[in-house]
Length: 116
Image (cartoon, rainbow, N blue to C red):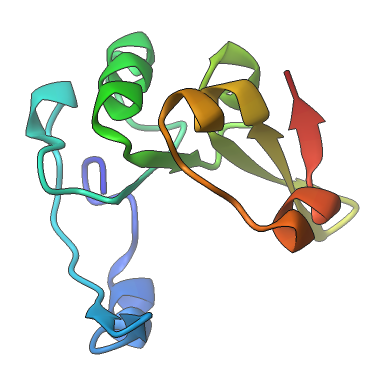
């Protein structure tokens, strides 16, 4: 998480959960040099970071970059979450995801707005 982007309530709900037998672990990441050992990075658009550096480093390390910034997928980030008429929508930058060596399910891709 960038600068505590995930609030305490969300972290408590997700604490102790597993994905494919792997426990979820949360830690704050200060910058692009802190991504080692991270599989997914969530950052808020309010986070004061160099997004270009994060995009580049997450691609190099195969870290899935998810944000609530609608524009980040257009800039090369992986997944951008946003609201439309009170409903959660998301964009996936398929080129960025593939460059990171990450595979996403076809079901997820069918629900997304795809950005090249």
